[in-house]
Length: 274
View 1 (cartoon, rainbow, N blue to C red):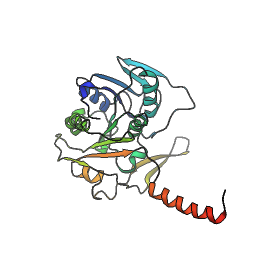
View 2: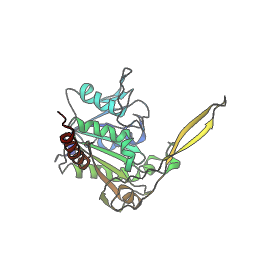
View 3: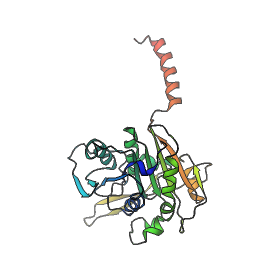
């Protein structure tokens, strides 16, 4: 991309909702540094909605301030509406999604609305960065703890890291996913380029009964395993290192594709397919 922040029109979005502390912090950090700052974010918390689009009901857009809009939909809806409607005459040069309240590592990228918003921007050919902050599980649903403590590492380092990424080029179909470790003083031990680490062994299912005796279920926290797999995002975060993982929109496994083509070509010859 090789641009400077002060020359860019930047769109911010997230999946935690337009009032989320991580998004507000990102606005405060980037607002004075960019040419134009726009915010188009979900009206309510949309965590875990992945890359879903709202197709069976209308979307409502509410202006919340100058260049600041909420959308009654998913993070992907937000980017889609921003590019094609809200900012159709002044499309963004860069999309930044976050700062997410909680990490997005390993297979989280398949569920995360934060990552999906960045991927939606990338599908339009717009460079995109997703920012996520590791937090203590006890602080996940609490807004009582000071923002400076929860987002200590991301507040200290995200602007410099964004500027560093802007000095390099990356493919149009790539998204940069950055995870900041949980450190109380903002002091991290470095930055590592990492790969995802598949760690899922099944979510904990919490069962209970409502007041009428009917069962209900909560999908509980995910088990964390294989944290020390070499070069992974989890390993970096466990070592108080910022993790930078390039993600791709490519969904076809190329090795399997080639093997499958060879196998079916053989079968086609044998069965005389037309």
